[in-house]
Length: 76
Image (tube, rainbow, N blue to C red; front, side):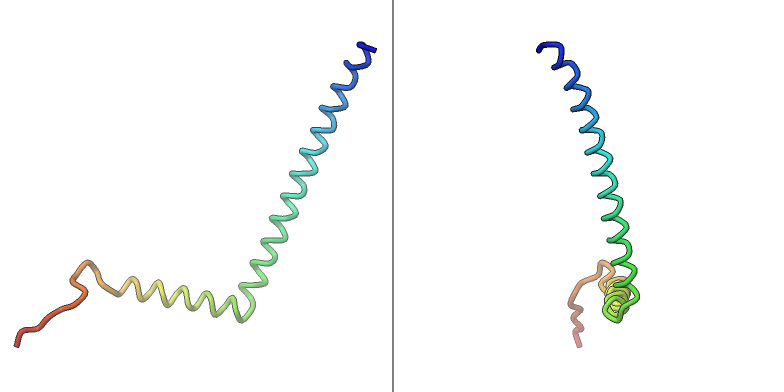
């Protein structure tokens, strides 16, 4: 019986390799599906609105408070 245990190790390695390949394939499919969802979102009205909002926020932050005081007092 001891000799047959030697052959079992090969099957385990083969099974591990098959599982690794299946896992890699599943990750690739998931990444492809996520990319498609992202493209669909960007083309949707919600995606366009989100992009416009992000651009407006970036523009506002670029124009506001360049290290100066938040409140400026005028004496007069």
